[in-house]
Image (tube, rainbow, N blue to C red; front, side, top):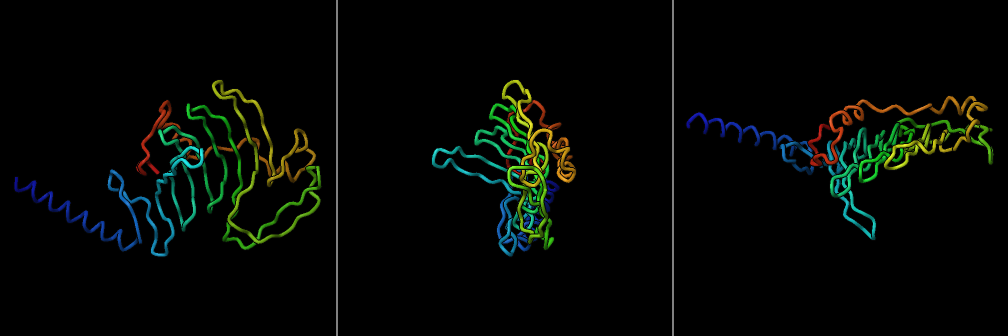
Length: 226
């Protein structure tokens, strides 16, 4: 009994020290069911680390929840979005707050309906080169240098699927927000270079799909292995 009390006192002391350290690091924060820190803001008021965000239904638009990582106040890396009931709606990837790489979207029943490919730009790089396309064509007529901002553009292959059957019903090719008509990518070497044949899934996507294969609902409290 004495050893049990000593163990409990040590545990309380450790938790107290941990909470003090976290309090010094963050301006605000919450703890999930496992005692992990989530929904924290830095001393500068920026969102940091694991976040679970709840959005209520508004003006007929259904509510949802999403979870992922914030870095310096913007979304970074692997994010998941769910219905309020817990059904997976989207798996997204972010770079410096903008979409980057493959994004996947699902029906509430779990059917994959769309895969998107995006390119995110680094706001820390002061400038970026953007292609200028001719009106009504996929031909690049010029390039211009613009100041880089946190943003993302459609870039690569977009695939649309039929709900229920999983049948591929449409494929689109995009190059820096310009849609490339079928067959035209080969005519424009620069555009062809900019477009991937198929966006690759990230390691986080593959690992998450492996762990949750066949599951309709997963825990959404910030302790899902982010």
